[in-house]
Amino acid sequence: MGSAMEFGQIAGLVAAACWAIGSFIYSRLDAPAAAMNLAKNAISGTLLVASIPLFGSGLAPWLAAPASAYLWLVISAVVGIQIGDEAYFRSIQILGPRKALVLTTLTPPFSAVLGWFWLAEQLELPALVAMAITLAGIAVVIRDRNLASDRSGLHEGDPRDGLLLGIFAAFCQSTGLALSKVAMEYLPPLESSAIRIVAAFIGGFLVAQSTGVLPRWKQQLLAPGVPRLLIVASFIGTYIGIWLSLVSANTVDLAIATTQMSMTPVFMVLLVAVFLRKKISLLAFIGMAIAIVGVGMLMRPDVLLGG
Image (cartoon, rainbow, N blue to C red; front, side, top):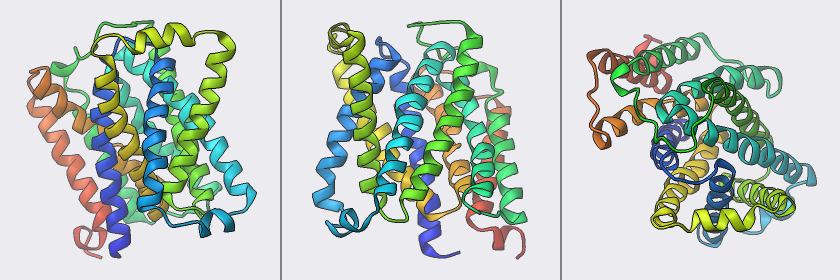
């Protein structure tokens, strides 16, 4: 496997760790899901735009990209970030981050279907086996009942709504990544990330403005302790996380990239264990080991499968 593909898979794993940290913080903020989504898009969008002069590819890609590339990114922003992230935030408020992240394991199957039928990505048997092992390990990790009480107690709701929102968010996120991958034939990951986040912010702002909720959201988002945590979560979970997720999606098959990103629940278990002082069971440790083996097989199928 080439170094570029290895880097793409590492980027997916780091994105998963960033999302775990961000999700843990977001779940403990006393603000509506839609308000948090709008605020994190404003913060991370500002950071991404500011990064373009430093780390971008210059004007050439912007000028060469067809209008369809920008359209795909805008649609991706609405589906994957404005709608998908809001559904995800509400899901973690209701279920807690650990249970909500369970549902993100649906993203790789959705992505495999989209990649197969839309992007003409055909996965070989070693990759399919490695994906199955990784997701099996994650499924074992999330059965650790000792970590079940990770809800913040803020903005709770019907668990069935949390379940449906989590499934819907996984579908939106996989669709958003697929749309972004089409556009990244012309625009690099950083520029694509900036367009997506800015478009999602504009869309969210227009909706909030038209419904008259901005004054109330502003008061909630500026409550003591909220801005600092929101900035940290937006920087780690969105600014770094979304940038690396597009680096990964642009480098490897969509299903493989999202499988690496699905390691988020494993990182979340560690966070809950450390910060909420919850004991990790032997079952969870076994699941982590299985997931790590699966990730290793994804990155080095020739070595681990004897190819």
